[in-house]
Image 1 (tube, rainbow, N blue to C red):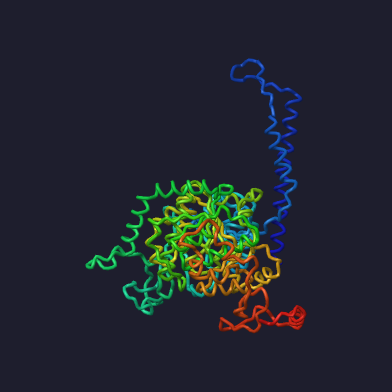
Image 2 (cartoon, helix red, strand yellow; image 1 turned 90 degrees about the vertical axis):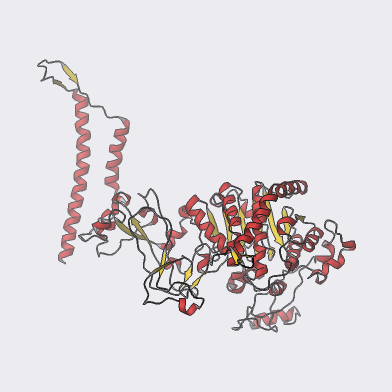
Amino acid sequence: MAWSHKAKNIAVLITLIKISAISFYVGYINAVNETLNNNLSVTNVEGGSKDDIDCTATITPRLQERIDARIKEELLDDSPISQNTNTEKLFPDTVRSYAAGLLSVSGKDFLSDPNYDFGVPFKNGYGSADALIVYNSERAIPDSLRRDATYGDEHGHIAKTSVSTALSNCDAMNVIFMPLGHTQTRPSMNDCYAIAGNFEDYHINRWFRMPNFDTTNKRERALQHSLPLRHFGRVTLPQGVTEFDLPELWDNYKLGKKGFLLQHFDALRTFFENVDTVQQELRELITKRKAVRNNTVIVMTVNIGQSELLANFVCAARSRGLDISNVVVFPTDLESKTLAEGLGMTTYFDEKNLGALPKGEAKLYGDPIFASMMQAKILCVVNVLGLGYDVLFQDVDIVWYKDPLEFFHDKSNTALQNFDILFQHDGSGQMRYNPLSANSGFYYVRANKKAQYVFTSLLYHGALVRKSKSHQQVLVQLLLEHSSFFGTKVKVFDKVETDIFPGGFHYHQDWDVMHDIVSGKSNAYLLHMSWTENKENKLKFFRQMGEWYVQDQCIGHGYMALVKGGEVTDGSLMSQCCSAEPIFSCHFRDKPSKEPCFNSPCIDKRCKQFWKPTPELVAALKAKRKPLS
């Protein structure tokens, strides 16, 4: 009660001070007006004469506006009167050179504010935690909240305000994303965050209580609380695993066997020796075939091991009447070149740079064939960007429902046009992909110098790509560095907030999105069958989704038997390989499908059915006389 009475007295005192300020301005105006009306003059005392000195006070229009605005601000100020009487500061004076005040804002409002689109997808539960705003000086603190930011609210807690108010006096904002709890690849740890005044830095240095990594036994390398803190790479896991093992110069120096670094030097030499010829040939081909639309070229690369997935993309798009005239296919072998040309696609076979890549299909994500094909994905984008064309790159395991270029070319979406590179969300929360988790199998790149330098840098990091067996994780780290260093604007379309670019995450985990797709209610432009172990399963999943359009005779190497004399004319395989209607078949009842697959086996251990056999559904199927496949 005593504190409440004291607070009321303080409130009354502040109100009186405001009234005094208003009275001052009103009195000032009256005094000035009286001066003008009386046209006063004074005697020059120093000179002893009675010469009049004109000291007529003139109020300029700008001064009058300022006076009026100040009076109006005081009269209309309805902000709550702070009852904060705390005397203990949130930060001691010893850190006030870089931490003068602290406020909190809604984390959800901060991350979703359209004025501050950071381009990152949202982690599940992101709205449950507030964001902290630390101010490096009193001037950066909002005028109306300086006491609360310095001392806390009336309870001594961190005061909370809106995003716009919290940032109203900030000339610059430095953003750091913090982990939200436990994940499978990053178990909850006792993390500490050290902030020290020094030369400004925009990188995170991570220290762990781990032994030096001088053993291959992971158990001996894991986190141990008894050890001192040691410096490790920022993408190191507490299990004693680093996600970025560096490539070696030599695999075996004595035997003269080159490591990934020297092998990449050889690949770069080939690239530099032929880049002018390749780009000239490519420019002539794109011009001749008119394979550009709104300055955009759609880029795909394929080897014979994935060739039927390319065929399915082409056949599905043409079945829907979608424009794929600006697709340029970069095959890595003569067999896939034959198929692409037989399907009527603009095709460029860069034999010098890509001819030595393996022909087989990748059996697993990250296997040697998969890693080798990453070089092709990088080179074809670098070469087309070098010609000044925007690039939509996509993997072959994609089907379109609508033309995605309509989305990227929508000039009315001004916020979208501000980004240099835009990605489908991969959906993975692994540390090596955070915080962007950008999917390198579907993205749009503008041919500006910032984006061009990102992919040139990725080309130079080819040895690290082969060592890590993923160009996606290397690309994500380069995107983060270029975003921070050069201001490259990167956007990843969140897998939950948007349903326009669904992928493997949705197919295997977000079945609400998949039910919308099979029922025709979705806004999706495409389906990307990522997160799928091998080509065999991708074919099965596309079939039961009703998204397979390739005749059996063109699966595998079968199409080569259709080529007469070993040569193919432009588009000659279309009628023999493409089905006008989707070819449907059931395979797994625990995966999304266009029609129920109740009698099919499960592929996952938990065996959760995509379709629930409700009486209504069973009756509807019987009415259609369709067997339960």
